[in-house]
Image (cartoon, rainbow, N blue to C red; front, side, top):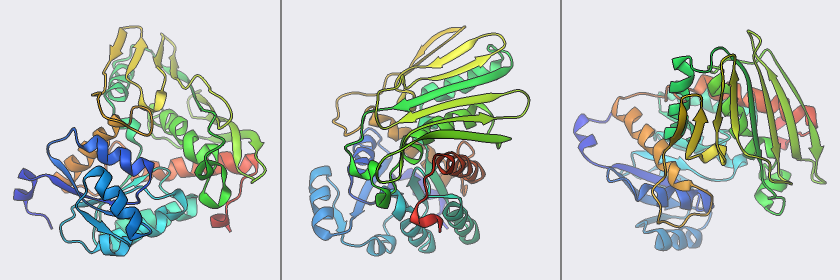
Length: 338
């Protein structure tokens, strides 16, 4: 167990996976004084060393196993592709390392249960990296909803669509591609957050597959208790509005584009804006906002918590159930499903 004195020091991160999102996470942490990236592991030493040199990470490992055994690491960020989330995160948890794993936590409900059960059995911290929830705009949204200014919530409308059909990781089935798992999750978690993490009564989904058999366009209706409904749209083929809208009996709140990393919202009580620090170079839009989930992880570890109350493992399981229902109705099955 950690002794309290440790938290006068920086939280020391190990990075599993040397891809674009890992790069953005490491760059985002530069803004924070009490976080330090100490090691990176990749599929090959060459990849790890290249990453280490570019992003100023001293220790480089050619295997995730070596990373899991490093005594100088407080927590591991898992940024490998979706199909490897389960194996890499499991390895870290078995080694007693707290884990922040990229979303979606796993490929399907079965895998998600397996990982959540392992973390609970080993009593090791695990959190799905749904970074949107930790942004000031999302916190403000929940404050305004709870204040009652929208009245009773009736409907959520959220979309995320970008023409990214050329990216292998997103379009190839073997790499865990598909609009639901990759970008649809942002719409699903948005609805779930507003609906209080409740399991929908019913999920209805439809859409289109690409030649690989992954969903490139998916629309879904989540039917919730008490007359509430969420309408979600995701696409790898076109630029959708990428906004999150919450409609109540008294008014409407809108989280502005890009809804997954938004810097502003509007509602009856006026506009709220929280601009991210600028000046660093990122692979994806507004990735500086990744620093907020890192801050949350540090707070949880300081308190000795095994999960974050704002992204609980029970809700992660519900997100997995919703996404599996959506993509199966469009006709997507992954090798992990069999």
